[in-house]
Image 1 (cartoon, one colour):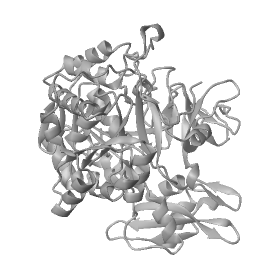
Image 2: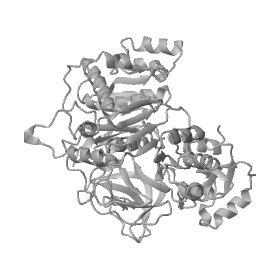
Image 3: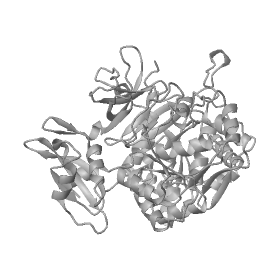
Image 4: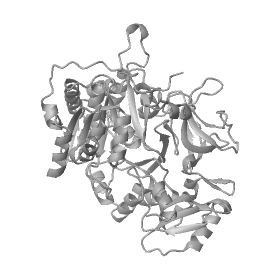
Length: 570
């Protein structure tokens, strides 16, 4: 059993006597194999930049040499604070190539949240856009470990630039860092046992860093294989697949600082395919569609209805756009039936897939069938209703004693993964013990935040997150189930469901609903619509009509905001 991690010591390469069978599966060794196989193929398109595989590796290597020359040692942590842009990907690969560990930082964080992530992760260096680094500058005295900064130009004003330079007197511009990197600087060997760290905000509390081995995150979330194909046995296998693959183009709309965007981009790059990034700082459907059309995108990666609905509506106004687009993949939250209907109305044969997973579990399965990302047992088959997911043999629904519930059981349990799972939470052994327990048979599990049931056919029916479950008169209500029913109504644009205090029931199911253009509020009609789709105790007792349902930076419902609204806040 792997130990619960605290602050990590600098990593060292495995000796021949203690050779790790996964050693070859470091992310940089895999990427290098692909870059050798298809050096001139386009790897990345972002904001007018077109970067080949050889070019991406070359710039990442230059950054790695700069970081090593600046004193960043193997196993130390380097934070990346930027919007989606080519340099985000270069920085991620460059940090890994230096033998260090990249730390993803949410660009929407305020000063206190930035202080927490940078301090908790023990970051020694920061790669950041100047306007975002200005916020870090406010808490710089609280970050004694942070000793170096590399700054990306982003049009920051003079005041922001002055504050950053004052806080980081030794900072260097990104392009200057690459241009001045010593080309003869030796870089350390990398291993699949090297760390991969992903900070996740969750729904409550401060962000936590999920610590993986690189070989494990590759198997659990990034490796992309054809149905029935064996998992790669070496970087050479990965390179051969890249050389032989169809050069598919995916437009990644999820932020790279979040798991869904990052994993989709990495999986494409390790297949020799093309990643297209939108570098806009806000989501505008017409601009996304124009980019997808211009780049001949085959697949769109979105985060639920918040992105998929306006994109489908815009395409319906100009059905001749995006002739190459054949698939839409959603992660983070399933596409609802009305939104699926919009896409089918645009193009009947469009492939629509919901991917299920999380920072603590990796990619677990799909609502449209698929293969266990780990390459183990054959996947379980299931229904295709958007909330029943086909999952691999390493995934289970566990009861309170960590025992897998059998197919067809009515028991509700925690969705969990065993096998290739994280080492734990970085710098948090208490949370590690809670989320990564060991059962009576010695198996170690990664518990997701979601609850579900196991259907008779073996599929897993997703109910929702336990952290926001509503307990009303002793009955448990999972908000996502109610939200799906509300969003099936043709007048509803978006919805979020939260508990409100109730003297009789304990908690009252409460909905915040935004309406489609031209629709009028009709609470009785909306509740009647829900009553034929939900048990009575799940039907909202109160509906608040709002102009817009707020979502987080990655497109998920903002439950904190919704709770403040129902309690009389802003």
